[in-house]
Amino acid sequence: MSDPLFAIKQAIDFVEENLQDEIVVADMASAAGYSLFHFVRTFNKVVHHTPYDYLMRRRLSEAADALVSSDRRIIDIALEYCFHSSEVFSRAFKRMFGIQPSQYRTGGFVDPRFAFSPKTLPYLQHINRGDFLAPALIQRDAVTVMGLMTRVAEGRQDIQQLWDSPGMEISNLAELSRYGITTYPGDWVEKGAFYLAAVAMNATDIAGHTLVTRTFPAGDYAAFKHEGSLEDLAYTRDFIYQSWLPKSGRRLAYPLEIECYGENKEDNTPNQVLISIESL
Amino acid sequence: MEPVISQKSEMKLVGMSFFGDPFDTSDTWTEENQIGRLWQRFMGYLQQNANAIKHTAAEKAMYEVHIYHPETFEKGLFEIFVGVRVEQLEAVPVDLLVKNLPASEYAVFTLAGEQIASDWEMIIENWLARESYRRNHPFSYQYYDERFKGLENITESFLDVYLPIEKIEDRSSKK
Image 1 (cartoon, each protein chain N blue to C red):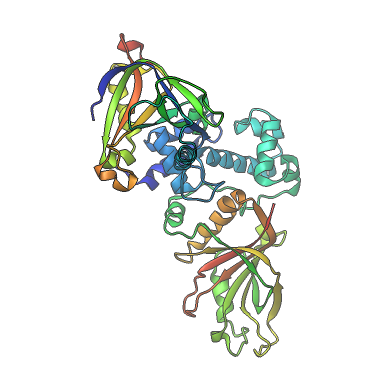
Image 2: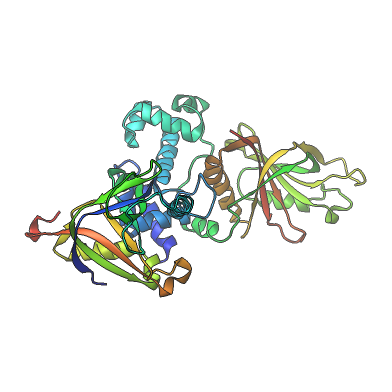
């Protein structure tokens, strides 16, 4: 029997080729070479979405892109992605993005955190590796941290430089818990998100003047274990925002993301990612 | 795996059902799929209400029926029904449903061991594509009797799958 991940990837590729065609879940099953029932079972297990939900989220995400990258009429975009009326399209769109298509267009950009990206084989391999997908829901007290901040447009090279920077003037750095805190300003898609490489501050710690101090709010957080490499972190993040959050009955409370590093100071891969959440 | 073709008369089942994607766990956050939860709901009900179902057939067997609707092909949503066979209907409580399975010829596939957890529907589809039969009703059912030892003992288990069929007289007219 073929590897289920490869079979499911066939169905995913089929979806990508037919986003504007009237395909049904039974066609996705044929593309995978599975019976419909076995396909539905396997797809849910591997992708953590129902096949129909996957198809709808992909169509809506492409439609969202068309809304901001073109000035075609909304009804034309709706029809192009197989939504048979603007009412049906608006309802589905609002369910996924929280706002009407026209408001989304006014906003003027697609936030890649929340648009549903086509899932790749490395992504599927990553999320099927461990049990990190079910987060621990925790309450945290406010934490004050200090460290160095930069904008990260792409890649994480800049982040490693922060940790190694002579500006990181903390006398007992090696003894402190390390965090990486990402915040998302309104222009982050163009200019990058802010990343603060920081340690939890203690009154007794001696710090230099180059450091930024910030306090992160008390509240509810969802904590996801990260297993795998630094490159895989993007997949963990995709899963959190595109798959877990929309189905969790919760939303982001603050637009920030906390990476926690392990005890081993040589290890530059975070082992946990936290997002700040509240009930809908 | 070759099926046995057998004629069966009409059957009345009493039980419970689920409609939706059986493997969508997003609203529950449990590992258990909806079919497992349906069985638990039904068995729990039987325990609490031992005499709720009257005229139960003299067999130690239970049925799991998969019913295909238009939304099955479009969205992957199935109706799953689990129940027991009764000789006649009497005072069925509001908690329970009745399914009338039609008299028909059935292709009976006996699944052994690991086959039970495999893509056996594909085996059936391939068989249908090969033989001069077609489905004549949009369902199939699984017959669980004492030969089924539970999923944890699947290697020693057997399960019969019944598919209602009719002969295609002229193969060229097959859809």
